[in-house]
Amino acid sequence: MRRILFALPLLVTGCDLAPHYLRPAIDAPPTWPTGAAYAPTTNQPAGLPWRTVIGDARLRTLIEHALANNQNLAATVANVAEARAQYRVQRSSQLPTVSANPGATVDRSITNTTGDTQTFAANVGISSFEIDLFGRLKNLSKAAFQQYLATDAGMRSARILLIAETASAYLTFVSDRDLLGVAQETLKSGNRSLALTQSLHAAGLVAGTDVADAETVVAQAQSDVEQFTTQLAQDRNALALLVGTPVTDTQLPTSLGDLDGTVALVPAGLSSTVLLQRPDVVQAEHALESANANIGAARAAFFPTISLTGILGFASTALGALFTGGALGASGASAATLPILGGANRGNLDYAKAQRDYALAMYRYTIQTAFREVADELARLGTIDTQRAAQARLVAAASTSYRLADEQYRIGTSTFLAALIAQRTLYASQQTQIAITLADLQNRVALYQFIGADGGA
Image: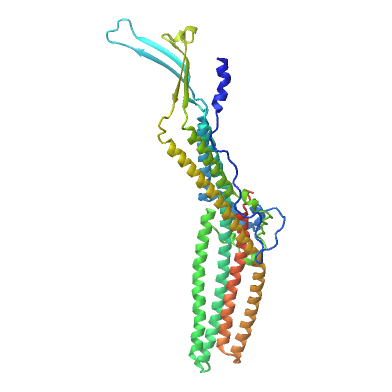
């Protein structure tokens, strides 16, 4: 008996038929790209916590509200709790189930002259405990645990994405507000030019084509005002959906210029191995490890399944004598099931292998996608400062050109066409400048997201 008890832990641990897991090699260059589009790399550690990236107090508040109230994130958190509960259920199958079963019965017959027959019982037993000789239960438990870790990493990825989306929506709203302001200013100046041109035309000093040209500027600016007014309302709705609560005017800045120095630049580091820390890459690797463990469970199904049951208890016809020595009884049984023709086992094993191959491909693709995302943002980062400086010079030159052309037109030393061309050039250059500024700020947010910094820090 002692030998059996001593050997029981060895029987329970059994063997493991799952393939030995080795982390796949990274299918990406070891360092970030270099060239004309890229800034020189530094050895600064990669990534920053989001509160370090975001310096604007109003945006920080909105992000905190989003992390607390966003329902999509709440659903992701619930998925993590679900996976954790499933792992606990699967883990419990490796342990015996002990149950107590007290009871009493009374038998009475119509022709019985000796009275009722009473039986009392109190039992404690182990029901159908499987001895995991070949690691089936162990690998199912391991697969469930890796799936839980995958969902937990997915939650961290969802947090980072929510932070980045909230910041991006905030910046988009502000840029559209700036575009609306430029359109309104262009509409005002266009109306002044149109009024002057109409008066000159009435005096016979300019042709009717000049009036028509002036009207095109006014009509285009008016159309843009209405478009950006609608866009601002939609931007606010999108931001409110992310935040989970209505967004007030006091929670929003007036222009991109107020935010230009409040979004930090996130370093990418020297090595692309930082991508292994990205939550979505971690999630993909846990999914791969889960699929690897399922192969071990599928292989174990080809071998015998051995289960034990046992009961230890008391039985007596008198309640007072239930726990006396003579009332003690014990029983035990074992059963073994061995698949002969295989049944669905071969198909289950092939399915588990296919799932492993799929998870491996997705892990590699996730890393490749992560490398491309970071490389794209680094290429944008490497040229954005020069582009912003060039665009600022263009706006300044266009503003001077329009001011001089408008003055010359008003005093009659130049044509309206020259003033019209200068005005359109200024309008387009101002819109482009806002778009480039937005691209710069969103590039910094995207680097935070794609480097994979901790969404909870």
